[in-house]
Length: 227
Image (cartoon, rainbow, N blue to C red):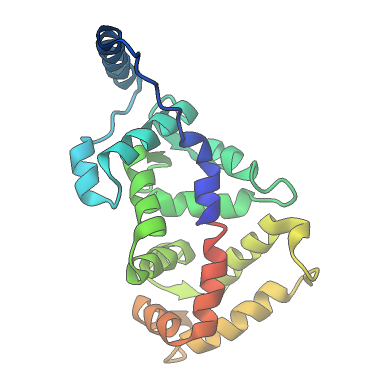
């Protein structure tokens, strides 16, 4: 989760200081209000009402306003495509290759599979990752690992995600990893998660395994740091 906040750390904007003179402050407020309205009309996609997003997420209206300003600064059209998402994400992992993990992460954000992420998609996922319950976070993580969105996680999907994480971390993995490390890592996890040994992990199996095994939970919490 840390990387998600890092990726969009530029979303924080400086607060304006009101004029000491009350009349000057009022005109400054009116000008800011007009500028805000103009900014909202200039983007191609306008988000849902902030009140609705406030009800749907764990963010306050003020937090949503700050997040939207930053999102719009990075993506003036009001949506972000995968290429832009990769470029933003790669800035925070300069010593590794973040392209594949950014691809998987983008698909998890793009819940409607339209090839673009709107502000609503972004802020909903961010709300879960930062302030969601354990169950909500695990369900979101399951969706990330379920690459083909068939409702199951197979071993190859899990290997692809884990390998993408290792590739992204680059030379900062210590000790230096062998090529077969991701597969070995997944073999241990998959054996524990695939309760009925049918070759796939269901959502129920995933939730149960994660919550009953401290080692799995610790590993997932470590992986959360790159989300």
